[in-house]
Each structure stands twice: as structure tokens, then as C-alpha cells.
Length: 222
Image 1: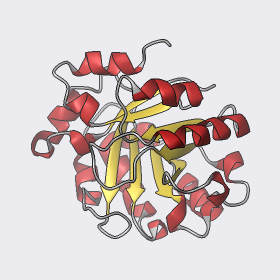
Image 2: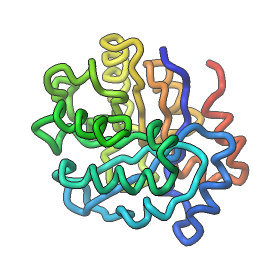
Image 3: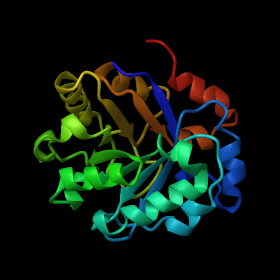
């Protein structure tokens, strides 16, 4: 199985001092998870291209596009990521779109790769793995299995997603499998045992008194 990676979600950070918040965790995490919401695909709005451009950090970004028609926006977000972290880290950064929002998964993955970033595809808790079209698993860099319905932070982990994590790990032993939603020091073990290796945590990390200790607990052996 691929290496364990921790990606704190800035959705739970203080947007008034965003780069200061990122700096407080970037020394002991692997990616910075950025949630982009359009108010259409999900019932909430969050940061867009200008805020992504303003980010300054020393770790790759993991940009989760919870938006309709992602094919219209990947170029703008790719440029924003490159401005935020530079070309070298951009090549290790992800643009992740939802399978439910595109009829051409392979084409969109190819476009993201052409733009110089890694590509990911996300599935909502009630979306089956069969919704991934064609040979997606052979070309995508990461699959995100949502463990809450996207749109708001602080929700409870949906345990019925765990078998889907296990099924995907069986299908793709070397794939980066990400989980996002309701992750804490208890739920992370269920996700990791099933095969998840990229862990997104928002309120559990940014709401912690000791953020480094919170991240360490997500990495604990089981």
C-alpha cells in the first residue's frame, strides 16, 4: 500500500489569517487540502481561484473541486496552484473533481495532467465505484472517497463507506485512496484498516489545542 499522507483541510482554518494557519501545520503534514465549493454541486460556497492564488506554503496543495462543470475551471485552478506553490510543488499537487460532475473522466484526467498537476476523482458516499468510467483506475493519481456528504465541515463519519474503501483497495493495491469527512483519532483507524492512505482532517486538526499532536494521532500504528 502507498505511504500514509496527512492533508489538513483549511476549510476549518481561520480564513482571516490563512497563510499563518497553514504555516502552523505545514512542518508536519504532507499536503494542504483546499475545499472549493460553488453553491450548486454542494449547498455551500467557499474559496475560489483568488484565494488559492494567495496561498503561500511549502507543501503541495490538494484542491478538491466540489463544483459543477469542472472542465471549465481546471485551467484557472492549475494556474492558481502554480502561483501559490511554484512549478516544482505544483507537479506534486492534486486537482480533484467529482465523478458525479463529469461525463468524461478520462478526458478531464488527461487535461489536468497536461496542465502539469496530478489528477484525482472523488465519489460521494452514495456513489458506487462503478460510476468511475472506463480505465480511470489505470490513469488517475488518487481517488477520494467522501466519508460525509460534501458541503460543510464538522460532519460525522459515514461508516458505510468503509466497505467501498476496502473494495477499491482490493482493485488497486498501489492507488492513493483518500478519505475526507468526520476524520478523527477513532474513525481514522477504520478508514486506514480498510485501505485508505491519504487522510483529510479539518476541524480535528485546526480545532486542536496542539495541532502537531492531533496529526501524530492520525499516524498512530494500529
